[in-house]
Image (cartoon, rainbow, N blue to C red; front, top):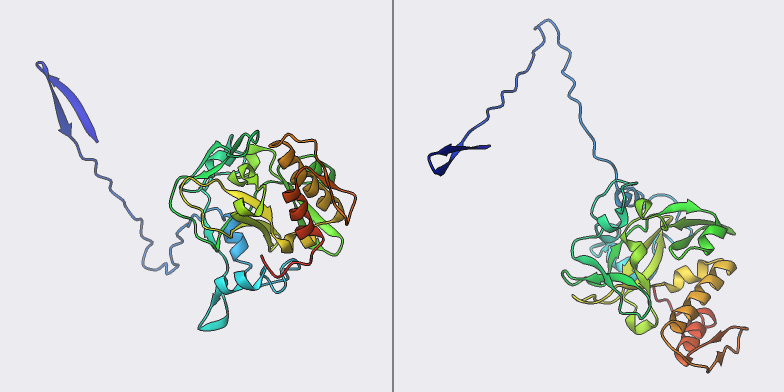
Length: 286
């Protein structure tokens, strides 16, 4: 520590040193009981809980535990393909649950909240740090378990597939009980999609599928695997989001009808994307 004292018109800094003496109270020789030293364990993070499950238990949404063959190779030791290491993560900044504005405080290093490049979308997440390479993962998506009805009315919810006709819903509406991933906007087309929402061990992760350069906004869309596990009701929610995103950015009276279902779209590009996602069998992409 330093103390400041006045001498005349000048100021003199006096360095002081504090000595801390630690004493140990030893038991008498006749007591051979070993001393018990309390150890404070750090709180387990969602990522630690998730990775502890790698290679253990069932993962009904992922065919053996992973979303696709492309991702699987990222987790395997190629010298021993049976050795699964688990996903690589960009870590959230550790913040206690329930803290006001917790979602903002959990932003990983290099990511910032700023104005979205999508007109009328408000804010989004922008990379102001190093390049994020394909194969990296953000997550898990944090929020509160809620009902399907509440989730469908929220802009911050995901459906989690638990098994046949069984689903769970997580809602990040409350900033104090969620993380920064709530601010990531949905992509408007494949060209701007750089994150795929994937499900792993009952959690939603954002898988980087395209290099994210400094200045790029993070844009997410459900992976083909995740889309196939959506319930019928949740699929309709995402179809509405798909159409609403474009409606907010264009002003046109032209309507493009889907020949496979009753839905219509405001642009031909979104009709094509809808057809690819929901009426054409996926070709094994993430």
